[in-house]
Image 1 (cartoon, rainbow over the protein chains, first blue to last red):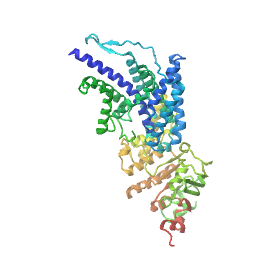
Image 2: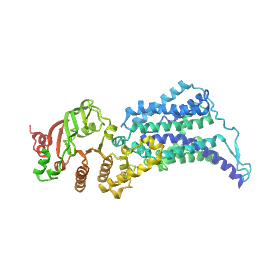
Image 3: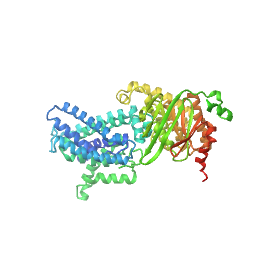
Length: 302
Length: 276
């Protein structure tokens, strides 16, 4: 019995850790959707841009300074997006804003690689390479855990706790939902749209930075980071576009689900189901519960 | 004071003695607004005095809503100025308008549908909170105390408009008439000096209309709020307004007390059509 639990736990744990990483990217989508009712196509590009910025700055600065500077750059980017793209488009349809974010995606992709170069960079955070072995006494052989995954999970957990306080314990949460529901009504009661958007895009930028850091450590900082965003889409369909806890739970379910599916039902399909399993789950959710597990309403704009 | 006496002569509404108006709170001067080739407003001027109930009427497409949108800054006219509390501007910024005490409701209800009645009304207090939105996010000790004060104020408005029973209900689930009332509550939570109501009684049944009329008169009387409203129901407009402006095809065709406007030939033509 114990011999079977060991590998199962190891797969489950690995899946959950990967899920946290998906959740990090999904969180960026959810934040912006909650605040402006727009599906931000550029989230993946922001992850790549943030990671590139961090990795290149770390060549000349110590980690803490490079991280701070990257945060500042992401806030500056949020400021520029608010000023140049969102502000002229106030009160426009969600679809128009969505198209604008596609434009932002191409710009950030190109701009990031022009500015920082398009090579593959390794992001070295000084974490131990060799896996830790836990639960050795009860389980024969123990479970292997990657320190990078643990670091990412802890960071993500802290980030989520911080955001939960930020958005639930303060009036920002209410203002945010108001802006998402109706721009004009929000303006008419004097909610400063521009400030709200600036806050949210800045926070999404910093979340992208953390996600970029975690994924960059695993995969190296390269263009494919921008595609990680595609894995976040099933996560938000599962969790609901408007729910921060939904992003986390959705990430964990997708992460654990696809790893377990690969190991336990994958052989029946000849393996390799990890790549599409998440999308099938998302499809089933779209059929039977389109608002996701925690979503507030039907998703209209994906 | 002519309108007040006119009211008394009609023998309806409040007695003239109860109606006291202050100076001009708002003046629009020579407003012209067009969208592409379509002229929504041409050279419209009027002024609203403090504490009065002022109505803008006219057939569909006359430019009534556009006028409200110009006053609170959603639309920026090509020509003309808006003078509010002595400050003259061409382009009003919606945020400035809200900060300076202009609140409004919308023709097609614009509530925050996923939120409860209480939360919707609370958003009206955002500008009254001493600390900015960013500050509240970072430091929530004093912000929480402030929240309690504002909550108490909002509860009084909820009592005033008799919507206690639906405090916790998500507004998306409420019937139309109640949604309109919640929207009024949100506007009142801003403690406005000038309240703009875009068709506050549209789509209501007789009973709901009577309630809404009573609330509008009560707000005006108890808080001294100046009210500018757009309404289609002539009976209502003539009953509760001190003064009426009539728009037709974006032009002002009449301006005066309900009695004067009612007898105006241009107004009758605009509403009933002219025999050619």
